[in-house]
Every structure is written in C-alpha cells, then in structure tokens.
Length: 359
Ligand code: 13P
Ligand code: SF4
Image (cartoon, rainbow, N blue to C red; front, side, top):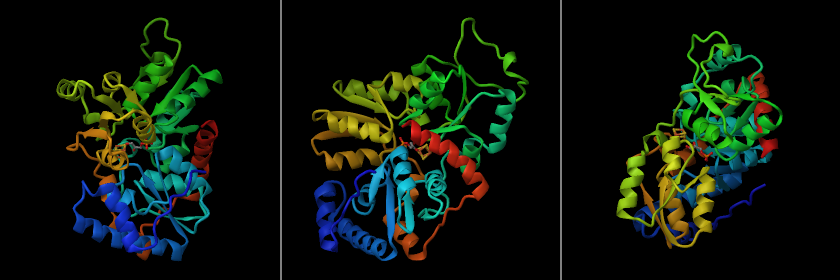
C-alpha cells in the first residue's frame, strides 16, 4: 500500500506547511483561512476514524493539507480496496468514489460534491454495452474506470490511463484478436496505435461483426466508442506549436485522454501520476502540462525549480467542485454517501479485481 501522508496537528503547523508550498501562489490571508479549515478536517478525521483520498487534480490548498493518500485513479483504487477506516472521503469525482465503494463495500464512502460528474462516465450506458456485446458476441469488454458501476458490471476488465495498454496486451496474450474498449475514443485510439490494433467505431444498426468494412490484412481489431473527456479533447496540436514557438526548450506532457494527434506531438504521455513522476525525475526545466490545470500548481509548489506552463482556460468543472469547505461539510454531515446496488457492485468488482491483478 502507498505511504500515508501525515500533517502537523496545529493550525500554525499547517499554515507553515502551506506557506512553504504555496506562498508565491496563494495570498497569505487565504492560506491562514485554509489552514484553519484543514486543521479542523484533520481533527474530524481522527475523531471519526476517516481517511481522505485526494486525486492529483485537487486544488493546491486541499491537495497539500488533508489527503492521507494522493494519486491517480489506479493508485487510489488500490488504497481504497485495502482501507480499514470507518469512513473514506473521496476528493475526486463520483466514478472514483463509486469504485472505492465497489472495492470496499463495508466502508462508508463520501463524496464532497452532490454530483461530481465526468463527461466520459456520462457518455455511455449499460444498455449501450449490452448492445455492443450482441454485435460482437464473445469479444472481451475493457472499460475505462471513468464509467459508472452499471457499465463496469457489463465489462470483463476495467483499466485506468495507468494500465490500459497492459490490460489490452494481456488480452492479446490470451489469444484475443478483437477487443471492445470503452468509452474514451481518444484513449482507445492511443492504445490501439501503441498495440498495433485497428480501431473501428460501429454504428448502432450494425447487425454483426462480419459486416464491418475492414481494410485488407487487418488482424487485430479494437471496437471503440465515441466518448470524450470535455477537458482533454480541447487541447490541440496548434496549442503545442504555439507554445514551442515561444519556448523552444519546453517538454510537453499530454494525458492519454488527449487526441492521438496531440499525444503524437507531445514528448510524453501517461496517467496523472505518470506525468508527475516524469517531471520529478527530470532535471529542472520548463514543462507544458496538457491536463487539468491544478496539477501544474501542485507540481510547481513541490518542485520550485521546475517551470510549469499550463493552459488554464481549460478546466475540469467537476473536480473543481471539491473544496476544503465542501470536504469539511462532508465530514461534519457525513454527506454525500455513495452507494452501489450490491448485485451491480458484485459484477463490477470482478472487472476491477481483474484490472488490479494485472497491474
Ligand atoms: P488518472 O487515472 O490519470 O488519474 O486520470 C483520471 C482522469 O479523470 C483524467 O482526466
Ligand atoms: Fe472526467 Fe475529464 Fe474531468 Fe477527468 S478531466 S474527471 S475525464 S471530465
């Protein structure tokens, strides 16, 4: 299990910590205010035997003051699966909190936002997956974790951006030459390119797989879905070219939810934690992050000698709903509890467990 983060017990201690990390970014009076809320949250956690899991996209004051664990979807799923606290608060979006509940149903899982949506999770329904399985009988279904529980329940394997390629390669190793990969069109396109698969997007009225119009000599087929992340779909090759013109030495990092063209024009692509590690393992320098902007703040605050360029007009509104104030309210009122129907959770857990076993 990942290492648990500890924080000073006092308001003054947290204020010092936030000042070290964020003095150049957040005004002092705001840091004092946030330190008071964070200290209250950390006290409530102790009283209620609760832990906080914080996704890498959390805003800097929250990210640096209350999560017991931070990470990408894969790392946080692993922590959630093994958590023995009475309450798990997920500072992320709903599909992440649902995943925690599925993997560890005995815990009370809270999401500090009433909705916590995600355009990818909303792009596909369980009925859509059942229809695809009728069109492609016997073809294994790999579902990105950015989906709701009923969609996961229709799937054979889950994956995250951190292990999507590994999951697909594992299925190929098991002899599958066709894979249904849902619902992110761009993540699928990036994985298909890296694994030598030909990607198709069948129409709803396709009766059977043999009706697909495939180019000659295609051996490996990935069946995709046209879901997109409303944030990452907005980054363009032109954005990268413009930044490179101004800063020729910039190293460009793109999340694999960006289009294959954007990923091709970048220097590195990986999960949110993959991107953080990449920057931390490099020498000081200048980086452009094509992902939710807060992550650039979080990296810069821990690594002041790295210059992080961000395109901050493009934000994830759902991740932005999670604040220290909402997290304190979640703990005080034990809201918003996330529940998954046991029959659905049991089937979804199989797909998640298979993913966790692969890596
Ligand atoms: P990671 O799994 O890379 O943390 O990404 C989650 C996500 O929602 C990216 O937009
Ligand atoms: Fe969903 Fe995109 Fe927001 Fe990630 S950044 S939670 S994929 S909408």
